[in-house]
Length: 485
Image 1 (cartoon, rainbow, N blue to C red):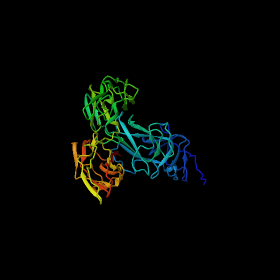
Image 2: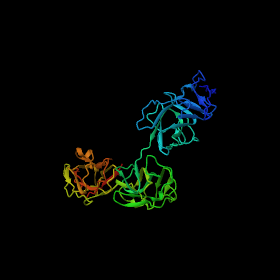
Image 3: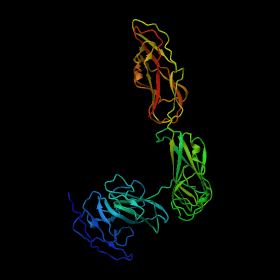
Image 4: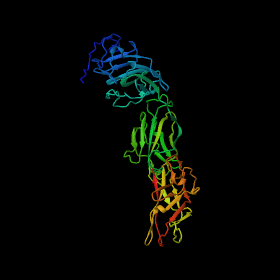
């Protein structure tokens, strides 16, 4: 189906102000609602003439909606009422656009927003577009050179906005509700040591908890001053900073030694410490991936679970450091534990005479099968038992004649009791043939808290000797297998 795209060129009614900009006032330029509007000159939209809160549309900007709804230029406005409450604290809020419509711009539109925060304060800007579930930063960008995509998103993500002359500036690819929010300061240190506890309770590595590799990501800012709510952009004494990381077992390494950075002016940065990095830290704090002062591989082979401690020391008074976040990324080994036969691997069913009827023999095996869990991971695991046919000199006894039933309890041979180690479902109901694999001991995927131990059982075997079975020495194999999932 062919759809005609209506594009109109607006006859802009302009008011020349002392700023020398074009201000779109309330004059009606068209009586029709259009699906697309293109402005041919730079256009400034304000609630009223002279206000500092404004939106500036660059020349050639095309305006549409996400849902291709008809729009009228005269409906686009700025007001101080937002349609959706903001869940956090806010410094400023306003609506720009058309009520109940998600406008999309073909290029970034500049928003200048007056705030009461002191110059130099970092702030976040959030937006709620009609049809979204919540506030986000989708469509916002810090760059006037970003590309605006057809869905209203931007090709470059936003960064925090810094107050200058009582204003912040951000660019948007869409028009809806906008909220300016303060950045929460998590931790601050000045002329002291800050110990940040990082609890690691579970891992999503898909393996075990034993470390084979770890990286540390630090988001921080060294400031000239002692007020983290109003960090100064001046020169700060970054050379005083040092970082250390301590594992749950008490091993400590240095990530950054004092006097590594110099005293250059620095903004907020994210630094990754990685043994595989090729760059050594020098000069001022700069975002990137760097070698730690001491290798992170020191932690390899240890358990990742527990409380890690990131320590930052600032040894000069008057210019401190804001710590926004610390994140540790682990790669762990895929060891699934070990299987142990906790008695002789030979099961002797003793001597029996052939009979004219089937003979049913039961025997309890002490500690014949068990699992030694030396890792204590959260990974689920189970064991199976399966018997082969028993082969004699001239005859065979089928594996279906051998069955197993669970004992009364699981025995902890060593280590700690683990209530998550249980019997398989089938053998809990009675004797089960070992013709096919039968689940014996098992533990579901669940937080295991690093519990280790050796667990055995005393299973009951039922062996049926068929009538008129040929006399011979019969031997077979019971296969005991461990699976991890």
